[in-house]
Structure formats: structure tokens, C-alpha cells
Image (cartoon, rainbow, N blue to C red; front, side, top):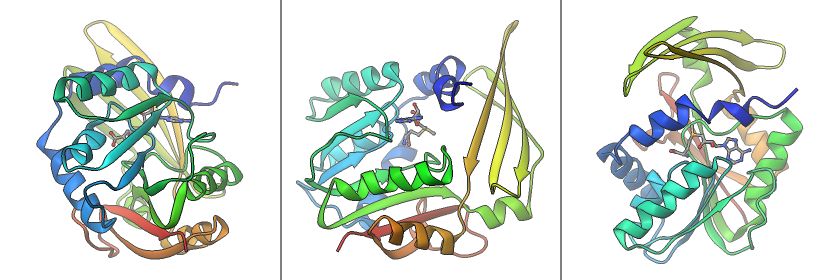
Length: 245
Ligand SMILES: C[S@@+](CC[C@H](N)C(=O)[O-])C[C@H]1O[C@@H](n2cnc3c(N)ncnc32)[C@H](O)[C@@H]1O
């Protein structure tokens, strides 16, 4: 059976992403990311997966040298177009986060907005090792997930919202054995309906610390990456920053 990521991000998801303007939210997110990762003008950053380059664009505007990788080809093309339009340098590859094929020259590798935990435990570790591998000594990696404890405490079995004309209804379940949140998604617009599935391994802070260690990284701190504030039980995000020594 095909892995859920192979079709989840095509179709309605990609259309919603395309319809979303490059927002002020991305500028604010990138500002916090620059601060917590101590990025400067000239810092070399891998944005993986980069989606349509919304964070890459803001980092490039601040003088970072960005390379983005994403498995969704239309998103990669959009990222390239955005950069051309803005007259900014940046390189984008259509590729897989499990096999980056990038040189060891990055000051930071960013896995932003719930893009980690897509695979089984061994493969998630391999993904993190791949990130560590492209960092220069002293480089940092950021892994951003939802705060598992908060999600489980306020578990929403059904979530429904409308985004750029698409009605999205998600039915969630928690697989306690595998520690994964599984989603069954219904996308609707006009008469058209599409169903998709998702499955994401959510890590606790101590599990994330152990994962980082297994990948040759030292956990520096955990914060809420949207605000940059220290992580608490009530944080929405669990954004872990690891350092390669
Ligand atoms: C939730 S989006 C986040 C994108 C981006 N980080 C952002 O903040 O806008 C997740 C992205 O992961 C990409 N993706 C899914 N599986 C992937 C894989 N195996 N390798 C690379 N990218 C992948 C999807 O195409 C999608 O663009």
C-alpha cells in the first residue's frame, strides 16, 4: 500500500496551499525562527520540507541563503516562482526528506509546521540523522510538532473548518501503542469530495531529546516555535532545537 504522504499533499491540500497568500504569519514565524536558531545574514539554511517556500522566502529576505526540498513538485515550482518574482536567490529541489542528497554546509536545518513523524520510528530517526548530516559543526536543527500532551488532554475527535472555499472535516484517533495521531480527512468543494488519511508519530519532549541524541545532536532547548516562548504543558507547539557539536 502506498504511504499516506504520497497522495495527501496533492489535490485539495495543494490547492489550498496555492490559494493561501504569502502571509504576514510567515514573516512573523520566520522572525522567531531566525532568533531561536541564531541565524544571521549569510547563514545557510535547509528548509525541509519547504512546501511552497513561504518560510524560505522570509528567511531569504532577511539575507539567509536558502535551499528548500519538498516532495510535492507543484509546491517546489511555486517556491521557485515566488523567489524569481521577489528577485531573491534560493535553490529548490523536488526530493524526499528521507534522502536529502545535500552537502555538509548548512548552519541550520528547519523542519517546520508539523512535518516530522510521518514515518515509522526507525525512519523518523533516519530523517533526523539526514538533517544532522548536512550541518556544519555548531549547526542547529529545528523539529516542530504540535504539543502532544496538550493535544491528548483536549482531544478533538472531529475537527471541521473551511479554508479558501474548501470544507475540511477530520476525524482523529490516537493509537496509544504506536503513539500516533491518525486522521481521516474529507475535503469538499462544490460537488467534489476527496478522502485522505494521515498518520503522525507525536513525540514527548524526553522522547525528542533521546531521538536527537541518537542522531548525534544535543538538545539545546524546546520552545513554542510560533512565539519563541519557553515550552510549557500549555504550549501549542513543541519546537525542539538540537545542536551538532
Ligand atoms: C504541513 S506542510 C509544511 C510545509 C512547510 N514546512 C511550511 O511551513 O509551509 C508538509 C509538507 O511536507 C511535504 N512532504 C511530505 N512528505 C515528504 C517527503 N517524504 N519528503 C519531502 N517533503 C515531503 C509535503 O509536500 C508538504 O509540502
